[in-house]
Length: 152
Image (cartoon, rainbow, N blue to C red):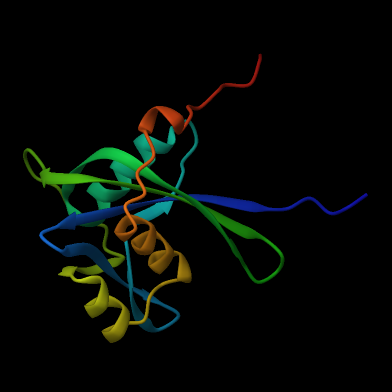
């Protein structure tokens, strides 16, 4: 019997405003890297709930998903994979106060070229999501699917 694939499910947000994209700066293995606001799906969350939560935690902005950009798999050391589901939409200031996740060193509004040419990216998935966005791909949110609970 073949070995079962271990998969980590993540979400990400491609947020654009006047030709610039919102990136978060993180430290990974001692290096400062750029990523889109992104993170892991938590138990009981839908994909949309997860991306809204991740954007808020990492940027202190409220994210309004408008479309999704597809998904990608990234092979990880040890045989596991990350499946990343990317969304796009707009942001607005959080009503009240919000604290940014301490793992996020800063946020930056950069063009795609500024990000790709001047920064290491957290993974190739960052550039793939940017490329899909710039190619105009927009999939309806209704096609994302929802969390289905297992029968009791």
